[in-house]
Structures are given as structure tokens and as C-alpha cells.
Length: 83
Image (cartoon, rainbow, N blue to C red; front, side, top):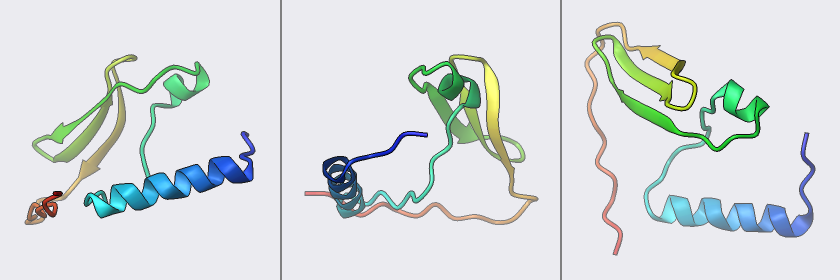
């Protein structure tokens, strides 16, 4: 596990605030476990499927997550415009 110093934590917090200012509301990210184990950059695709939403690792050609919406009606939220 990596331990961050105060400067690194401050930089991450500033980055999160900037992402939120631009409309990014993500609070948790998915990562390919194999990419993490092999210390490789993430190359992930996300898209709609017949069941819901799938997160796919392009590097390892593996499913990272497949979210089954169980036929629920959904709406796409519009991200606020950034000047």
C-alpha cells in the first residue's frame, strides 16, 4: 500500500475539486485488477449492453464490471457546461 505525503494529498484534493467544478461526480473508480497487479496503465472501455453497463479492460480483454440494471428505466444526467 502506498503512503502519500501531505503535498501529494493536497494535490489530489485540488484535483478532485477541479473535477467536481467541471461536473465530474464520480466518487469511486473501477480498475482492472490485473493491470494493477502488473503496474500497467489502465485502458478501460465503458458502454451500454443489453443488460446495462459494462466496464471492460482493453489490455487484458477482461470484464472489470457488468452492471445489470434489471430492466429499470434510466435517464442520462446532463453534465453542466464548463466555460
